[in-house]
Image (tube, helix red, strand yellow):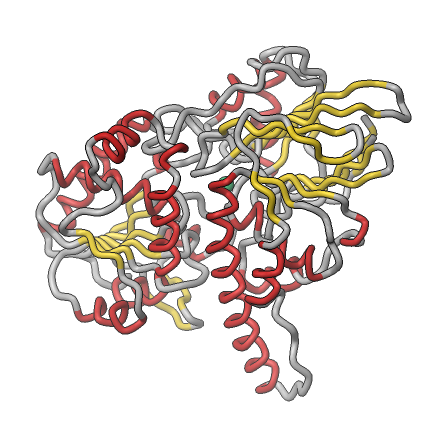
Length: 466
Ligand SMILES: [Zn+2]
Protein backbone atom coordinates (compact mmCIF):
# COMPACT_ATOMS: atom_id res chain seq x y z
CA UNK A 1 0.00 0.00 0.00
CA UNK A 2 1.03 3.61 -0.33
CA UNK A 3 -0.10 7.06 0.76
CA UNK A 4 0.03 10.05 -1.51
CA UNK A 5 -0.05 13.44 0.22
CA UNK A 6 -2.22 15.79 -1.81
CA UNK A 7 -3.16 18.68 0.46
CA UNK A 8 -2.43 20.46 3.76
CA UNK A 9 1.24 19.66 3.20
CA UNK A 10 3.44 22.28 4.89
CA UNK A 11 0.33 24.46 5.09
CA UNK A 12 -2.91 24.32 7.05
CA UNK A 13 -5.74 24.05 4.54
CA UNK A 14 -6.85 21.68 1.78
CA UNK A 15 -6.60 18.45 3.83
CA UNK A 16 -6.45 15.48 1.40
CA UNK A 17 -4.54 12.19 1.64
CA UNK A 18 -4.89 9.35 -0.86
CA UNK A 19 -4.46 5.75 0.28
CA UNK A 20 -3.96 3.01 -2.28
CA UNK A 21 -4.35 -0.58 -1.09
CA UNK A 22 -5.65 -3.86 -2.57
CA UNK A 23 -6.20 -2.12 -5.90
CA UNK A 24 -8.58 0.45 -4.34
CA UNK A 25 -8.23 4.16 -3.61
CA UNK A 26 -9.48 5.82 -0.41
CA UNK A 27 -9.41 9.56 0.20
CA UNK A 28 -9.00 10.81 3.74
CA UNK A 29 -10.77 14.20 3.57
CA UNK A 30 -11.26 16.27 0.43
CA UNK A 31 -10.75 19.80 1.66
CA UNK A 32 -10.64 23.14 0.00
CA UNK A 33 -7.49 25.24 -0.09
CA UNK A 34 -8.33 28.48 1.73
CA UNK A 35 -6.11 31.48 1.96
CA UNK A 36 -5.25 34.32 -0.29
CA UNK A 37 -8.29 34.93 -2.45
CA UNK A 38 -6.32 35.23 -5.67
CA UNK A 39 -4.84 31.70 -5.31
CA UNK A 40 -8.02 29.91 -4.26
CA UNK A 41 -9.51 29.51 -7.72
CA UNK A 42 -6.45 27.97 -9.38
CA UNK A 43 -5.83 25.59 -6.49
CA UNK A 44 -9.40 24.31 -6.12
CA UNK A 45 -10.78 24.08 -9.66
CA UNK A 46 -8.90 20.89 -10.63
CA UNK A 47 -7.98 17.61 -8.93
CA UNK A 48 -4.52 15.98 -8.96
CA UNK A 49 -6.06 12.54 -9.71
CA UNK A 50 -8.90 10.94 -11.66
CA UNK A 51 -12.03 11.30 -9.48
CA UNK A 52 -13.66 8.22 -11.03
CA UNK A 53 -10.81 6.07 -9.69
CA UNK A 54 -11.53 6.95 -6.05
CA UNK A 55 -13.58 4.21 -4.37
CA UNK A 56 -14.50 5.84 -1.03
CA UNK A 57 -13.97 8.96 1.08
CA UNK A 58 -13.52 8.97 4.85
CA UNK A 59 -14.27 12.47 6.12
CA UNK A 60 -12.94 13.63 9.51
CA UNK A 61 -15.13 16.71 10.04
CA UNK A 62 -17.20 19.42 8.42
CA UNK A 63 -14.74 22.33 8.28
CA UNK A 64 -14.41 23.49 4.66
CA UNK A 65 -10.66 22.91 4.57
CA UNK A 66 -11.50 19.20 5.11
CA UNK A 67 -14.84 18.80 3.29
CA UNK A 68 -15.04 21.75 0.91
CA UNK A 69 -13.89 20.11 -2.31
CA UNK A 70 -16.23 17.09 -2.13
CA UNK A 71 -18.59 18.72 -4.67
CA UNK A 72 -15.68 18.97 -7.15
CA UNK A 73 -14.87 15.29 -6.57
CA UNK A 74 -18.47 14.23 -7.26
CA UNK A 75 -18.80 16.60 -10.22
CA UNK A 76 -15.70 15.05 -11.79
CA UNK A 77 -16.96 11.47 -11.60
CA UNK A 78 -16.61 10.08 -8.05
CA UNK A 79 -19.43 7.57 -7.45
CA UNK A 80 -18.57 6.00 -4.07
CA UNK A 81 -19.71 6.64 -0.50
CA UNK A 82 -18.52 9.52 1.72
CA UNK A 83 -18.34 8.21 5.29
CA UNK A 84 -18.63 10.61 8.25
CA UNK A 85 -20.46 11.02 11.57
CA UNK A 86 -24.12 12.07 11.77
CA UNK A 87 -23.37 15.61 12.98
CA UNK A 88 -20.74 16.06 10.24
CA UNK A 89 -23.30 15.12 7.60
CA UNK A 90 -25.84 17.63 8.96
CA UNK A 91 -23.23 20.37 9.24
CA UNK A 92 -21.98 19.70 5.69
CA UNK A 93 -25.50 20.27 4.38
CA UNK A 94 -25.16 23.94 5.31
CA UNK A 95 -21.39 24.27 4.95
CA UNK A 96 -21.24 22.99 1.36
CA UNK A 97 -24.29 24.97 0.25
CA UNK A 98 -22.79 28.11 1.74
CA UNK A 99 -19.44 27.37 0.10
CA UNK A 100 -21.19 26.92 -3.27
CA UNK A 101 -22.89 30.29 -2.78
CA UNK A 102 -19.50 31.90 -2.14
CA UNK A 103 -18.01 30.20 -5.25
CA UNK A 104 -20.89 31.43 -7.42
CA UNK A 105 -20.55 35.03 -6.18
CA UNK A 106 -16.78 34.87 -6.46
CA UNK A 107 -16.82 33.81 -10.12
CA UNK A 108 -19.23 36.61 -11.01
CA UNK A 109 -16.72 39.04 -9.55
CA UNK A 110 -13.76 37.43 -11.35
CA UNK A 111 -15.61 37.30 -14.70
CA UNK A 112 -16.61 40.96 -14.40
CA UNK A 113 -12.99 41.86 -13.83
CA UNK A 114 -11.84 39.77 -16.82
CA UNK A 115 -14.50 41.36 -19.04
CA UNK A 116 -13.24 44.80 -18.13
CA UNK A 117 -9.82 43.64 -19.32
CA UNK A 118 -11.38 42.59 -22.64
CA UNK A 119 -11.71 38.83 -22.13
CA UNK A 120 -14.92 37.42 -23.65
CA UNK A 121 -15.14 33.86 -22.28
CA UNK A 122 -16.54 33.23 -18.80
CA UNK A 123 -14.79 31.07 -16.21
CA UNK A 124 -16.89 28.43 -14.44
CA UNK A 125 -17.49 28.47 -10.69
CA UNK A 126 -15.41 25.91 -8.77
CA UNK A 127 -18.81 24.40 -8.01
CA UNK A 128 -22.44 25.44 -7.87
CA UNK A 129 -25.29 24.89 -5.42
CA UNK A 130 -26.46 22.00 -7.61
CA UNK A 131 -23.02 20.34 -7.39
CA UNK A 132 -23.05 20.71 -3.59
CA UNK A 133 -26.53 19.19 -3.32
CA UNK A 134 -25.44 16.36 -5.58
CA UNK A 135 -22.41 15.60 -3.37
CA UNK A 136 -24.59 15.48 -0.25
CA UNK A 137 -26.46 12.48 -1.69
CA UNK A 138 -23.28 10.38 -1.35
CA UNK A 139 -22.92 10.93 2.42
CA UNK A 140 -23.27 7.89 4.70
CA UNK A 141 -23.35 8.51 8.44
CA UNK A 142 -21.66 6.25 10.96
CA UNK A 143 -21.71 6.42 14.76
CA UNK A 144 -18.59 6.97 16.82
CA UNK A 145 -16.79 3.81 17.97
CA UNK A 146 -18.51 1.55 15.47
CA UNK A 147 -16.25 -0.25 13.00
CA UNK A 148 -17.37 -0.14 9.35
CA UNK A 149 -16.12 -1.49 6.00
CA UNK A 150 -14.53 1.05 3.67
CA UNK A 151 -13.15 -1.02 0.78
CA UNK A 152 -11.85 -4.57 0.27
CA UNK A 153 -9.73 -5.42 3.34
CA UNK A 154 -10.08 -1.96 4.92
CA UNK A 155 -12.17 -1.24 8.03
CA UNK A 156 -12.42 2.12 9.79
CA UNK A 157 -13.54 3.50 13.13
CA UNK A 158 -14.35 7.07 14.16
CA UNK A 159 -13.57 8.37 17.64
CA UNK A 160 -14.41 11.82 19.00
CA UNK A 161 -11.65 14.29 18.08
CA UNK A 162 -13.07 16.99 20.41
CA UNK A 163 -12.41 19.68 17.77
CA UNK A 164 -15.86 20.74 16.49
CA UNK A 165 -19.31 19.17 16.62
CA UNK A 166 -19.16 15.75 14.92
CA UNK A 167 -15.36 15.80 14.47
CA UNK A 168 -13.60 12.46 14.41
CA UNK A 169 -10.17 10.98 14.40
CA UNK A 170 -9.92 7.92 12.16
CA UNK A 171 -8.29 4.53 12.58
CA UNK A 172 -7.98 2.37 9.45
CA UNK A 173 -7.42 -1.36 10.01
CA UNK A 174 -5.93 -2.57 6.78
CA UNK A 175 -5.28 -6.08 5.48
CA UNK A 176 -2.73 -5.43 2.76
CA UNK A 177 -3.40 -8.63 0.80
CA UNK A 178 -0.58 -8.22 -1.73
CA UNK A 179 2.05 -7.66 0.95
CA UNK A 180 0.41 -10.18 3.28
CA UNK A 181 0.51 -7.89 6.31
CA UNK A 182 -1.83 -6.05 8.63
CA UNK A 183 -1.36 -2.29 9.03
CA UNK A 184 -3.09 0.14 11.38
CA UNK A 185 -3.07 3.71 10.10
CA UNK A 186 -4.37 6.51 12.33
CA UNK A 187 -5.33 10.02 11.27
CA UNK A 188 -5.93 12.78 13.82
CA UNK A 189 -8.16 14.81 11.53
CA UNK A 190 -7.99 18.05 13.51
CA UNK A 191 -7.19 17.23 17.12
CA UNK A 192 -9.18 19.20 19.68
CA UNK A 193 -8.40 20.09 23.28
CA UNK A 194 -9.50 19.06 26.72
CA UNK A 195 -12.06 21.29 28.48
CA UNK A 196 -13.29 23.10 25.36
CA UNK A 197 -16.78 24.47 25.92
CA UNK A 198 -19.71 22.41 24.58
CA UNK A 199 -17.62 19.49 23.24
CA UNK A 200 -16.38 16.28 24.77
CA UNK A 201 -12.62 15.84 25.25
CA UNK A 202 -10.68 14.12 22.42
CA UNK A 203 -10.59 10.31 22.60
CA UNK A 204 -7.15 8.69 22.56
CA UNK A 205 -6.27 6.26 19.74
CA UNK A 206 -4.83 3.27 21.59
CA UNK A 207 -2.82 1.50 18.90
CA UNK A 208 -1.44 2.27 15.42
CA UNK A 209 1.61 1.52 13.29
CA UNK A 210 1.46 4.83 11.46
CA UNK A 211 0.01 8.22 12.37
CA UNK A 212 -0.90 11.12 10.10
CA UNK A 213 -0.98 13.99 12.58
CA UNK A 214 -2.02 17.58 12.22
CA UNK A 215 0.40 20.15 13.66
CA UNK A 216 -1.35 23.52 13.24
CA UNK A 217 0.07 24.71 16.57
CA UNK A 218 3.11 22.44 16.65
CA UNK A 219 5.29 25.30 17.89
CA UNK A 220 2.96 26.83 20.47
CA UNK A 221 1.53 26.32 23.93
CA UNK A 222 -1.97 27.78 24.29
CA UNK A 223 -3.36 29.86 27.09
CA UNK A 224 -5.58 27.73 29.31
CA UNK A 225 -9.19 27.32 28.14
CA UNK A 226 -10.46 28.57 31.48
CA UNK A 227 -8.52 31.88 31.03
CA UNK A 228 -10.53 32.75 27.92
CA UNK A 229 -13.44 34.32 29.74
CA UNK A 230 -11.23 36.67 31.74
CA UNK A 231 -9.41 37.91 28.62
CA UNK A 232 -12.68 38.42 26.73
CA UNK A 233 -14.28 40.19 29.73
CA UNK A 234 -11.31 42.60 29.98
CA UNK A 235 -11.49 43.47 26.27
CA UNK A 236 -15.28 43.89 26.24
CA UNK A 237 -15.24 46.09 29.37
CA UNK A 238 -12.38 48.25 28.13
CA UNK A 239 -13.97 48.80 24.71
CA UNK A 240 -17.50 49.38 26.03
CA UNK A 241 -16.19 51.94 28.55
CA UNK A 242 -14.82 54.08 25.74
CA UNK A 243 -18.05 53.66 23.74
CA UNK A 244 -16.58 51.36 21.10
CA UNK A 245 -17.75 48.29 19.24
CA UNK A 246 -16.13 44.87 19.46
CA UNK A 247 -15.86 43.25 16.03
CA UNK A 248 -15.13 39.52 16.13
CA UNK A 249 -14.32 37.67 12.90
CA UNK A 250 -15.20 34.02 13.51
CA UNK A 251 -15.76 30.87 11.52
CA UNK A 252 -19.50 30.23 11.37
CA UNK A 253 -18.91 26.66 12.48
CA UNK A 254 -17.41 26.07 15.89
CA UNK A 255 -15.79 29.33 16.83
CA UNK A 256 -19.01 31.38 16.67
CA UNK A 257 -20.82 28.95 19.00
CA UNK A 258 -17.85 28.92 21.40
CA UNK A 259 -17.68 32.71 21.51
CA UNK A 260 -21.45 32.91 22.05
CA UNK A 261 -21.21 30.34 24.82
CA UNK A 262 -18.42 32.28 26.57
CA UNK A 263 -20.24 35.62 26.23
CA UNK A 264 -23.41 33.97 27.53
CA UNK A 265 -21.60 32.85 30.68
CA UNK A 266 -20.01 36.29 31.17
CA UNK A 267 -23.41 37.86 30.68
CA UNK A 268 -25.06 35.59 33.25
CA UNK A 269 -22.28 36.30 35.73
CA UNK A 270 -22.67 40.06 35.07
CA UNK A 271 -18.96 40.29 34.28
CA UNK A 272 -19.60 42.35 31.13
CA UNK A 273 -21.86 45.38 30.70
CA UNK A 274 -25.35 45.03 29.24
CA UNK A 275 -24.62 45.62 25.58
CA UNK A 276 -26.27 44.02 22.54
CA UNK A 277 -24.59 41.07 20.84
CA UNK A 278 -25.17 40.33 17.15
CA UNK A 279 -24.28 37.12 15.31
CA UNK A 280 -24.31 38.45 11.76
CA UNK A 281 -24.09 35.30 9.66
CA UNK A 282 -26.90 33.27 8.11
CA UNK A 283 -24.58 30.25 8.05
CA UNK A 284 -23.84 30.60 11.78
CA UNK A 285 -27.62 30.68 12.41
CA UNK A 286 -28.08 27.40 10.50
CA UNK A 287 -25.05 25.77 12.08
CA UNK A 288 -26.25 26.74 15.56
CA UNK A 289 -29.49 24.92 14.75
CA UNK A 290 -27.47 21.76 13.93
CA UNK A 291 -25.74 22.11 17.33
CA UNK A 292 -29.17 22.16 18.98
CA UNK A 293 -30.08 18.96 17.10
CA UNK A 294 -27.02 16.99 18.25
CA UNK A 295 -26.93 16.97 22.05
CA UNK A 296 -25.38 13.48 21.81
CA UNK A 297 -22.12 15.28 20.92
CA UNK A 298 -22.16 17.63 23.95
CA UNK A 299 -20.01 17.37 27.05
CA UNK A 300 -21.81 16.72 30.34
CA UNK A 301 -22.07 20.37 31.41
CA UNK A 302 -23.69 21.48 28.14
CA UNK A 303 -25.90 18.38 27.98
CA UNK A 304 -27.20 19.00 31.52
CA UNK A 305 -27.88 22.64 30.78
CA UNK A 306 -29.60 21.93 27.48
CA UNK A 307 -31.46 18.68 28.09
CA UNK A 308 -31.86 18.49 31.87
CA UNK A 309 -32.39 22.20 32.63
CA UNK A 310 -33.95 23.09 29.24
CA UNK A 311 -31.71 26.14 28.84
CA UNK A 312 -30.36 27.01 25.40
CA UNK A 313 -26.64 27.79 25.69
CA UNK A 314 -26.67 29.35 22.22
CA UNK A 315 -29.45 31.87 22.77
CA UNK A 316 -30.19 34.54 25.38
CA UNK A 317 -32.00 37.81 25.71
CA UNK A 318 -29.44 40.28 24.47
CA UNK A 319 -28.14 38.09 21.67
CA UNK A 320 -29.63 38.50 18.22
CA UNK A 321 -29.03 36.26 15.19
CA UNK A 322 -29.01 38.44 12.05
CA UNK A 323 -30.33 36.69 8.94
CA UNK A 324 -31.17 39.22 6.23
CA UNK A 325 -28.85 41.58 4.35
CA UNK A 326 -31.09 44.53 5.33
CA UNK A 327 -30.72 43.78 9.05
CA UNK A 328 -26.99 43.35 8.55
CA UNK A 329 -26.71 46.75 6.85
CA UNK A 330 -28.66 48.37 9.69
CA UNK A 331 -25.84 47.40 12.05
CA UNK A 332 -23.68 50.04 10.28
CA UNK A 333 -25.86 52.75 11.82
CA UNK A 334 -26.03 51.21 15.27
CA UNK A 335 -24.84 53.75 17.84
CA UNK A 336 -23.04 52.81 21.02
CA UNK A 337 -21.15 49.78 22.22
CA UNK A 338 -22.05 46.33 20.95
CA UNK A 339 -20.45 43.04 19.99
CA UNK A 340 -20.67 41.91 16.35
CA UNK A 341 -19.62 38.35 15.46
CA UNK A 342 -19.43 37.63 11.72
CA UNK A 343 -17.71 35.34 9.21
CA UNK A 344 -15.40 34.65 7.50
CA UNK A 345 -12.92 33.76 10.21
CA UNK A 346 -9.84 34.88 8.27
CA UNK A 347 -11.55 38.07 6.99
CA UNK A 348 -11.27 37.11 3.33
CA UNK A 349 -15.00 36.90 2.50
CA UNK A 350 -18.42 37.57 3.93
CA UNK A 351 -20.17 40.15 6.06
CA UNK A 352 -17.18 40.69 8.38
CA UNK A 353 -15.57 42.75 5.59
CA UNK A 354 -18.33 45.37 5.80
CA UNK A 355 -18.01 45.58 9.57
CA UNK A 356 -14.23 45.91 9.35
CA UNK A 357 -14.52 48.58 6.67
CA UNK A 358 -16.90 50.59 8.86
CA UNK A 359 -15.06 50.21 12.15
CA UNK A 360 -11.35 49.66 11.56
CA UNK A 361 -10.41 53.35 11.39
CA UNK A 362 -12.04 54.26 14.75
CA UNK A 363 -9.65 54.01 17.73
CA UNK A 364 -12.38 53.37 20.32
CA UNK A 365 -13.35 50.08 18.58
CA UNK A 366 -11.65 46.70 19.03
CA UNK A 367 -11.10 43.97 16.47
CA UNK A 368 -10.92 40.77 18.48
CA UNK A 369 -9.18 37.91 16.66
CA UNK A 370 -10.21 34.52 18.05
CA UNK A 371 -8.96 32.06 15.43
CA UNK A 372 -6.08 30.97 13.24
CA UNK A 373 -5.16 33.41 10.46
CA UNK A 374 -3.49 32.01 7.32
CA UNK A 375 -0.49 33.65 5.69
CA UNK A 376 -1.27 36.80 3.70
CA UNK A 377 -4.93 36.85 4.77
CA UNK A 378 -6.50 40.11 5.94
CA UNK A 379 -6.84 38.59 9.42
CA UNK A 380 -3.09 37.90 9.58
CA UNK A 381 -2.35 41.50 8.49
CA UNK A 382 -4.60 42.77 11.29
CA UNK A 383 -2.79 40.63 13.88
CA UNK A 384 0.52 41.97 12.54
CA UNK A 385 -0.96 45.45 13.11
CA UNK A 386 -0.05 46.71 9.66
CA UNK A 387 -0.72 50.45 9.49
CA UNK A 388 -2.82 50.19 6.33
CA UNK A 389 -4.85 47.22 5.11
CA UNK A 390 -6.89 46.75 1.93
CA UNK A 391 -10.60 45.93 2.18
CA UNK A 392 -12.58 45.50 -1.05
CA UNK A 393 -9.50 46.76 -2.89
CA UNK A 394 -9.32 50.09 -1.00
CA UNK A 395 -6.79 51.09 1.70
CA UNK A 396 -7.98 51.62 5.30
CA UNK A 397 -5.91 52.79 8.29
CA UNK A 398 -5.88 50.28 11.13
CA UNK A 399 -6.69 52.52 14.11
CA UNK A 400 -8.91 50.22 16.17
CA UNK A 401 -7.40 48.24 19.04
CA UNK A 402 -6.46 44.68 18.05
CA UNK A 403 -7.05 41.92 20.61
CA UNK A 404 -5.96 38.32 20.11
CA UNK A 405 -7.27 35.35 22.07
CA UNK A 406 -5.58 32.10 21.10
CA UNK A 407 -7.14 30.12 23.92
CA UNK A 408 -10.32 29.72 21.87
CA UNK A 409 -8.36 27.48 19.56
CA UNK A 410 -10.15 24.24 18.78
CA UNK A 411 -6.76 22.72 17.92
CA UNK A 412 -4.54 21.08 20.48
CA UNK A 413 -1.22 22.83 21.15
CA UNK A 414 2.19 21.13 20.88
CA UNK A 415 1.81 19.44 24.27
CA UNK A 416 -1.65 18.07 23.40
CA UNK A 417 -0.32 16.77 20.07
CA UNK A 418 2.71 15.22 21.78
CA UNK A 419 0.58 13.52 24.46
CA UNK A 420 -1.69 12.13 21.76
CA UNK A 421 1.21 10.64 19.74
CA UNK A 422 2.87 9.29 22.91
CA UNK A 423 -0.41 7.66 23.93
CA UNK A 424 -0.45 5.47 20.81
CA UNK A 425 0.96 2.01 21.41
CA UNK A 426 3.20 0.47 18.69
CA UNK A 427 3.79 3.67 16.72
CA UNK A 428 6.52 3.24 14.07
CA UNK A 429 6.32 6.39 11.99
CA UNK A 430 4.59 9.78 12.01
CA UNK A 431 3.64 12.01 9.08
CA UNK A 432 3.09 15.66 9.93
CA UNK A 433 0.48 17.53 7.91
CA UNK A 434 -1.82 20.54 8.42
CA UNK A 435 0.89 22.87 9.72
CA UNK A 436 3.17 25.43 8.14
CA UNK A 437 6.80 24.33 7.70
CA UNK A 438 7.99 26.20 10.80
CA UNK A 439 5.34 24.63 13.05
CA UNK A 440 5.95 21.17 11.58
CA UNK A 441 9.75 21.38 12.05
CA UNK A 442 9.36 22.60 15.61
CA UNK A 443 6.95 19.77 16.47
CA UNK A 444 9.19 17.21 14.76
CA UNK A 445 11.99 18.37 17.08
CA UNK A 446 9.75 17.92 20.12
CA UNK A 447 8.71 14.40 19.03
CA UNK A 448 12.39 13.52 18.57
CA UNK A 449 13.18 14.60 22.15
CA UNK A 450 10.52 12.16 23.34
CA UNK A 451 11.86 9.19 21.39
CA UNK A 452 9.58 9.44 18.34
CA UNK A 453 12.31 9.68 15.72
CA UNK A 454 10.83 8.50 12.46
CA UNK A 455 8.93 11.64 11.50
CA UNK A 456 8.29 12.85 7.95
CA UNK A 457 6.98 16.24 6.83
CA UNK A 458 5.67 15.38 3.36
CA UNK A 459 5.55 17.86 0.50
CA UNK A 460 2.57 18.08 -1.86
CA UNK A 461 2.60 15.06 -4.20
CA UNK A 462 4.96 12.90 -2.12
CA UNK A 463 4.09 9.22 -2.38
CA UNK A 464 5.24 6.93 0.42
CA UNK A 465 5.13 3.12 0.44
CA UNK A 466 4.24 1.49 3.75
ZN1 LIG B 1 -11.01 21.75 11.58
